[in-house]
Image (tube, rainbow, N blue to C red; front, side):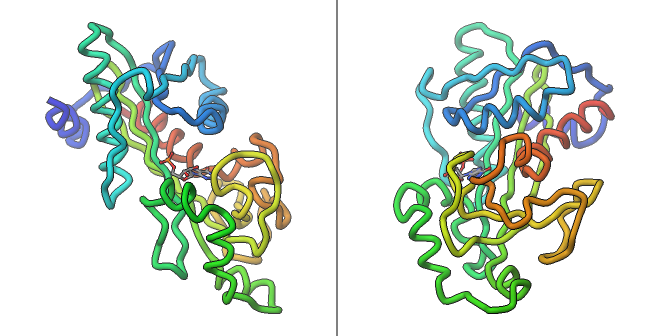
Length: 238
Ligand code: IMP
C-alpha cells in the first residue's frame, strides 16, 4: 500500500496538494518539535507533537536515514489506522556525519550521543588540530543530514536537508539539543547554501556553536528546516 503511494508520487502522477490545517509530528524530542514548528511558521498549519511513547514504537536500526524515517512513519500510520484516525503525519530522522570518521556516527548518532556523548566526540577528534583556522575547520568538517517524510491524506512526500560545518574543540552553549554544543555551521549565502569553511556569507554564527545561538538563528542553517521546506516545495509543485 505504502509502496504504491510512493510510486505514484515518484511518477509525478499526483495533482498539487493544499497544506492541511493540522499535522502530527512524531517525535519525543521537544527541541526538534520546536524547530519544526518554526519551519512551518509561515504557513497556516498547526503542528502538533505526537509522542512515539503513545503507541508500541520500535526504534528502527538501518544504515540509511530514509529507511529509518519510513519505518517510523509506517509504524505511526498503522497505529493511527488501527484507531480509525485519518491524520497527516510527519516524521524526521537526522544524524551527525563527521568526515574524518568516514561519516560516523551518522545513523548511529543517538547511540553515540547516549554512550560517549559530546565529550567522547571531542576526544575522538582531539588529534585534528591546526594553528590555521581554515585548516582546523577542514580537518574537523562535519554535517548534519535530515530526512523528513510527510504522509498527507495518504500520499507520501519526502524532503532532505543538509547543514555543513565543523566540530568545535570545546563543548560550548546550552541551547538546542543533541550535538548542538559541538557543531559550528559554515556561513550560508542568501539562498541558504552552505559556503566553504572560512567563507563569509549572509548568515553566520561567527564561530558560535548551535548550542550558543537561539533556535531562530539555528533555523537559518538547519538541516531540519531544509528538509521540511523541501517537502513544502514538493507539495506545492505536486
Ligand atoms: P534522531 O533524528 O532523533 O534519531 O537523532 C539522532 C541523534 O542526533 C540524536 O542524539 C539527536 O539528539 C541528534 N540530533 C539530531 N538532530 C540534531 C540537531 O539538529 N542538532 C543536534 N543534534 C541533533
